[in-house]
Length: 141
Image 1 (cartoon, helix red, strand yellow):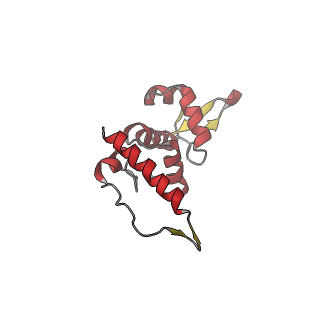
Image 2 (cartoon, rainbow, N blue to C red; image 1 turned 120 degrees about the vertical axis):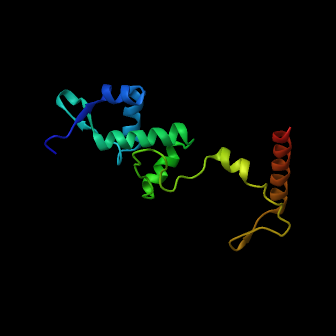
Image 3 (cartoon, rainbow, N blue to C red; image 1 turned 45 degrees about the horizontal axis):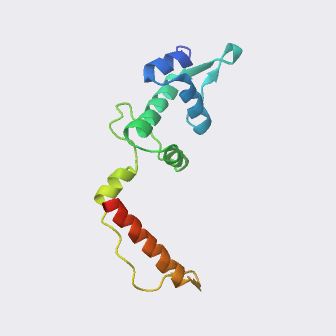
């Protein structure tokens, strides 16, 4: 730890090609993963492993199409892992674009829907299905 290198927020900002305010925002969003050391005058200094975590977050958000909430969920579930070459990250969920392209449309349900012990109001369910079908037709055109 004696030879540990600390980079200023400006150095990390230039290295990642991100504005400093984005790094400060990520500190608030991912406090368990991004923890800079406070130096004299409250300046932020990042350890090498923190910079690697920031690179992984950047890759997940900008290259893999994940959302802040998705990255938070990965961290919460213990699925967040730093990969030095960023070739893969453990258990990354596909982006919504990939799911929409690969998943077939859901088949229409014919049997009554029951939630717990109470039966749903079928008129409302039929209305919702009709609206969804209209939305599907609009999206197809």
